[in-house]
Amino acid sequence: MAKLKAIYVCSNCGIQYGKWSGSCADCGEWNTLVEDVIDVSVQKKQESQIKRNAQITVRKLSDLDGARMIRVETGIKEFDRVLGGGMVPGSLVLLAGEPGIGKSTLMLQVLAELSQLKSILYVAGEESVEQIGLRSDRLSHKLDNVDFLMETDLDTILGYLAENKPDLIVVDSVSVIYSESLGSFAGSIPQVRAVTEGFMQYAKQSQTPVLLVGHVTKDGSIAGPKVMEHLVDVVLHLEGDRYEEIRLLRALKNRFGSTQEVGVFQMDSEGLQAVESPGQKLLKERTGNVIGSALTVTIDGRRPFVLEVQALVSKSYFGYPKRSATGFDLNRLHMLIAVLEKYHGLKLGEQDVFVNVVGGIKIKEPGCDLAIMEAIKSSFKKEPLDGQQVFIGEVGLDGKVRDPYFKEIRLKEVG
Ligand code: TYD
Ligand code: MG
Image (cartoon, rainbow, N blue to C red; front, side, top):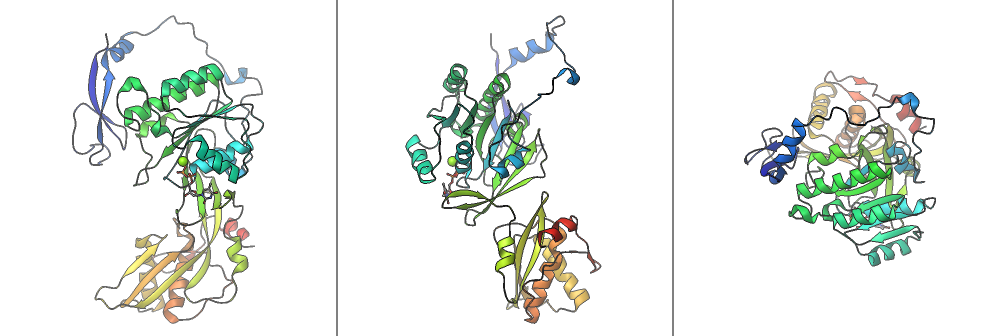
């Protein structure tokens, strides 16, 4: 007979506890422990029953014939690139991102390119088929091979899959699917885990690729416990500023490829468009010299991005001058200001300094230090910078400028 026991699972890191407490002892987050129920009798049985003479087969890699895995290429190059060259049969891919960032748009665009597959199942839990139809009509998507299923019950969906065996499955989104047998509400941790496990088993058994769409919570982590990230083969993250056009697709985890690749898209009225060389337009269109604005090249993953950084230096009317950075690390800005004071003689002690990286992209590496410093200097001295000049270089505490990593890639990007 099932022997149920209540446990508490941290929704941030997935660690289990026997008792509830206000904060997780492992990751330190507050208010993240949620109740879950496990069947202790099953666990005990598993421990005591080692199967000694079971009929199993072990294999050598050399036994596999040449055709190991044929990836399904989607035709959307930026998407395939991040996956490591297309979808692997039997893989479970999680596409996560904030609401409204373009996950459903991307999924439908990918499906529209997959005319080589006979049947695709799109489990629509969030939008109605009519809504999806309106959007795909507007974007002229051909989705003749896609069957839409409006269903949120996990067991019904798995039953449908067992009968109909589609070539590819998209679930939009995991947090609305639930299993009645669990009793907790959709989107809760036990539910999200059960749903992920259900689709994982199906993907592995049937060798069908499954794409799960998931949400990201306010602090940027994927809703649901870490266990979801452990279960899936690939975690893709679609990010960007909702008010800017650029969307970056990156792999946070990839069992079949590198996590260094970044896909770049632009959201416009025609959906998401792939961007081959981000920032090239900026380089071409920029004419004339500007005060407080410098061009630079940053690296994300292995991809170069041409960017404009702006600085505004203005007299401070408060005792403590304000420093503010958008798209750049504030501590690093403080350091660059100190270098400008000490080695370049700029008196910034009574000046407010604002730095802004244009276009919604964040600079997360030191290769753009020089550009930021030049922009600040230019604004302070009211001397324009050459509009065609691109600044790259890392600045150290000694005030010296060093070559940034991937210098060659950056230089190649600006020709
Ligand atoms: P959506 O894919 O529904 O986001 P998600 O599934 O991640 O919640 O995209 C929603 C936003 O994208 C919506 O606010 C409008 C914008 N959008 C465009 O700008 N152009 C388009 O062609 C489409 C389809 C959406
Ligand atoms: Mg959506």
